Structure formats: structure tokens, C-alpha cells
Length: 200
Image (cartoon, rainbow, N blue to C red; front, side, top):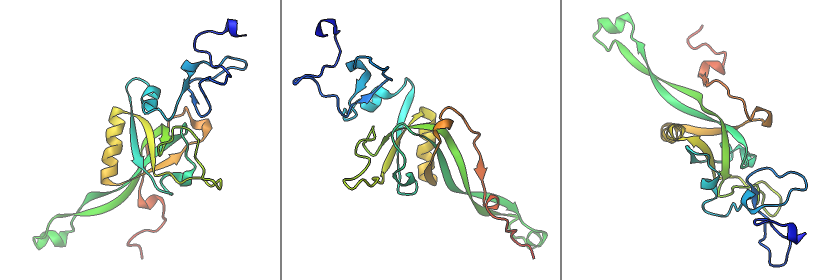
């Protein structure tokens, strides 16, 4: 009944504010009135800033069909950020090299993949902060070109540096793992192959 309605309630009227396409900032209970303060318009330029907890930042990374999980990543999902890069490792030279005056050590390049961030929330995909327009007119998933992640200031710097020095990819987490944290691990070439270089 209108005489029981409070300020901020959303009405179903001809001149009422349309709420289709808006995003709920908090869960609604069954039969609870729709309140304007619990809704947000994802098209609003300030939408992401309003969704950020204090002290957090948004960092956007470019993705392709592989790094963006072929379009199966959506706002609200949680991901891990993995970093693939080359590192130079010094290895000692042999005795013959030292006897001839050659350099006693030389550098060997190794490719490593490591997880640099775990359980990061995806705030937006491309310029979408909701799942609207995630498919084209034929119902096919749209391959995203960017993903915006909620991170701390220090983690935002780590992601930017990783982009400059290697390749950054996203790994989708299961809904059941939303609250869990995993140890950061490093994978080397010998971890994916049983081949022993130099063995006869």
C-alpha cells in the first residue's frame, strides 16, 4: 500500500524509475521491498568506485581468447593471476674454461610460471560490470578484451610489473573455492616433462 511506502522504495508505475539492468549491491530477501540505495547502475561511470571497499584498487589487464578463458569469465567471478616469464640463472663454468681464462660463470635463461595473486574478484569484463551483453545476437559468448580486477595497491603494482616483464593470464576458481587461499607456487620446465637433458 502506498501509504506504508517509505522514501527510497521503488514503485511499479508508468513514471517510476526503471530498474531493469541495475545490479543489486546487497542481497534481497523474499518479499522485501526494492530500495533504491541497494541498487546500482552498471552504466554509471562511478559504479566501480562505489563498489570498491576502502583501500582497494581496480587494475585492468588485456586478455585474449586464451588468457580470458574464452569468454567464460564474468563480473563477480574469482580468479588466480599467473605470470609466465624468463629469468637468467648463473651457472658455474667448468675447470677447462677457467684454465683458458674464459669466464668462470655464464648465464642460462629459464622460463618459469608462477601464481602471483590468488582469489581475486573480477569487477568488470571489457566495460561490463554485469552479465548483460555477455553474448552476441546469436547467443555466442563474446570474447573479452580486458578484465578489471579488485586488488590492493601493492598487488596492482605487481600486476603492472608482470605485464611489462612477461605474460599475465587468468585462471578461473570454482565457486566452492571463493573464500579459500592457496600457496603461491612456481612451475619450471622440469615439472612438466620427464626428459632429462644431457642423459644418454
